[in-house]
Image (tube, rainbow over all chains, first blue to last red; front, side, top):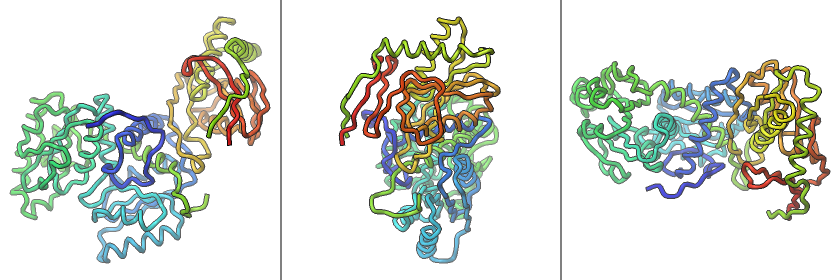
Length: 323
Length: 181
């Protein structure tokens, strides 16, 4: 699928709403830039002044610890002024809340907004309502682009390339924004992707995204260099989509026997892990797991995204925060 | 925006001669050569720093360590133009207590040199930082003064200086360009 590679010096988007609309060259630019930030994070002074004139708001309408902390750390390492706001699902109509929020952001002269929302498309709405640059930190079952970028960074670090890799994504594909972003990103960079899960958690028509589909874990793992095990939201079982967590573990969980059978298989997980559900303890803690590398790389990848977006000029005629 | 070549400021021989003289000026007054390090600014400064070190090795028999520094993340013009690509910083020595010579191809406004000093200071506290440039084209916007200069060339804002180096440009030469408006 990927054809000729062009090397970019800057992005073609002002926002990061999803990987679906990003080109392979833009994704490569983010991953290449992240490598330099990874180096910055190894220095005694882990901070650079690049974004010292920017104000960034982290708007988390859905609870999140690690993504929010990772973004905050990335923002502070770039010397931005940071405000974080975490609200549990409000009873107010989401549209109204978001519109008011946008107005407030406008009045406060915010440069960038990192938003997580349970509604797919909320970041896109916000991008229409404010002049601030928007970064999607997860919207409904739609996309979670920075998670996919850090997964790809981690894969590239491990294998030296994405092109030609075969990656299995296992779990609740239907409700997973991580799966969707990874499918877009991995396909664009030339990996082949197979998704796997119980039939109740595989969305109809997923194969139109250019992936193979299976309900058998062994089929997904056979020939794959890496597997992304998705976090199983425990309420799926209450919703009747799964018979039991134990049965899920013994059908779709990555277990020690898989490590034995596939000793070169690399294990990724977006966290937080349900131990004993999607990953057995021994798998999560094995040398084949790169889960903690993902966490470290996440900060560098988010720094790269923020830095590259900060360098994008404002569209003609738009006013906004003063220089 | 087109550019036309107005003059060749240095040819290959003159460029090498300028570097050799700079290398002598750098090393001559130094009492503790083991504390000295040359740090080139990405991108062409890195090649110039290596060549200066080669001349010092050839003429004085001293091995001076060479590093590469990228100051992109320390620039003050992110609002004015799209972010430039970041290049690697490689300092294979500690800068703590060192006598550092920053090397760049062209000195103009002084903003790159300012950014480079800030970047370097985040790696440690050198005893001294000096500045060596192949071309000083004037036009300073900050109080920065080079210690070693290959050639001084007064220029206007409508001109540009292009340093071509064998390592990446297939020739050694310095040109004065006129920006067509």
